[in-house]
Structures are given as structure tokens and as C-alpha cells.
Length: 199
Image (cartoon, rainbow, N blue to C red):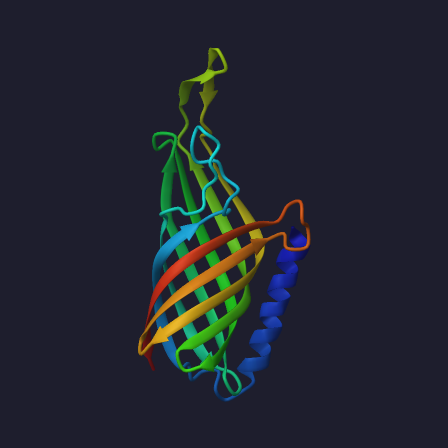
């Protein structure tokens, strides 16, 4: 885990150093605002008693990013997104997800942007404590909720495709966890509506 984070930070630092040396770095082209919904672990989480797997989740997400010119049709696209707090188990567990992202964007057409990048996904879980009695087979058992705050960090490989309409855009952004380990690989995605405010 530490090596993954270190690798991501190194790549970001090298990329930042590369384009901060150019005159265009401080002349960002646009600031943009994201509004969307995030689905975590596509087709890997059971969402009903019959064993159905979740393919879509309504998890409101907001974000902000910058567009820096790079070279020819390429853009540097750092951004931050926040999946608004979700509650589980009758509000005894609160989950926040923060995404610290960096993409390279390529515009092959005026209305199309392709993205490739990486993220550090910060998952924070806050437990309020308490207990609940639930069925456990033919009997019932008492389960206890955590009463502490826990965080985890994950590094993802990201791909996105974005359709541009003047100052607006619609984007599908994917995040692949453990891309080099097939048995641990997971895919999440976000659907975004974006407003670009030109500088």
C-alpha cells in the first residue's frame, strides 16, 4: 500500500514539475465543477436477498477541478471530488469518500475528451457505536457497531470519456483498484455533469 501511494505521489510530483516549468502552468484555461453519482465496486456488492449484484448506486458526488494547457490537444486535469456522506445500519455508520485525482486529457475532437490518470481514494468510516439484534440462520445474534473513526487510502488507475457541449460536459469516469492483481481487482465509476468556467 505504501509503495502504491509513494508511486502515485512521485508521478504527480514529476508531472507537476514538468508542466510548472512552462509559462502556461499558472495560466489555467478553465475551472470546472462536477455534480454526479458514484457507484463503488461495480457488480461486486450484493444488494438484495436473492444475491443480485449492484451495478448502479445513487451516491451524490460534487467536485472541482482545473484545466491547464499542455501540448497540442492535451490538457492537465487535476481535480478533487467528494462523495457526500452515506449512512448505513440505521445511521450508526457514516461513510465519506474523497478523491484526489490527476488526469491527462486528450481532445481528438472539439466535442470529445478522453482521460487517463490516477487517484488516491480516501475512504473514511465513522461509527457511532450501539448494537443491533439480527437473524443469524435460524437464531438471532447481537452485532455491535464500531464507535471509532477509521480511514483507508487506495491508489487507482483511471480512464474517462467526456462529451463537451460549449461550457457543459457529461463524463463517465472509471477507477480500477489493484489493476495488477486479478484476484483483487475492482472497478468503480462515476457519472458526472460538469460546468466549465473559462478563465
